[in-house]
Image (cartoon, rainbow, N blue to C red; front, side, top):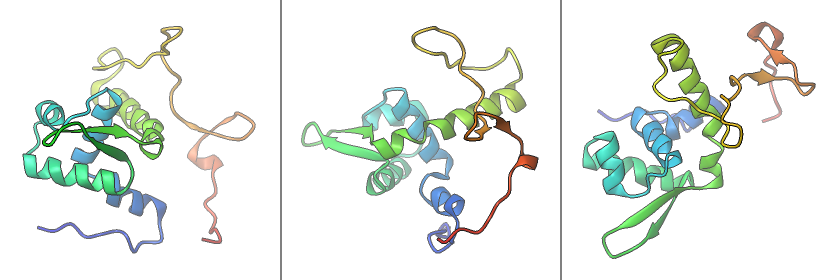
Length: 146
């Protein structure tokens, strides 16, 4: 079964999901943030079929989420690009949502803390330019020139 491309949608969410919206791509990106760099290490951690992993790594490299550097004739190292690193707030938001609604308080599998202070990070949210946290009721979606 072939997945429908969302590339023709005039929607940032749809086009982003077309690139990183499947479970395997998100887990690859998560593991890249955790320092995983090689095909074999991604394969061991995620447990996805080799052909799917190959396909997802290729797609993430094609879209400049990961860079690929050959370290030998048969081995490559995958690292996050700046574009890929900027997905971190999205991953943290998904993780915090799962911590709250799937695991529950005190049952979180991983705790993200500030490296310097070792204190938990702030909940991801929508913040106005003045620093106020906004709720959905505070937002208005307007058409843009694009």
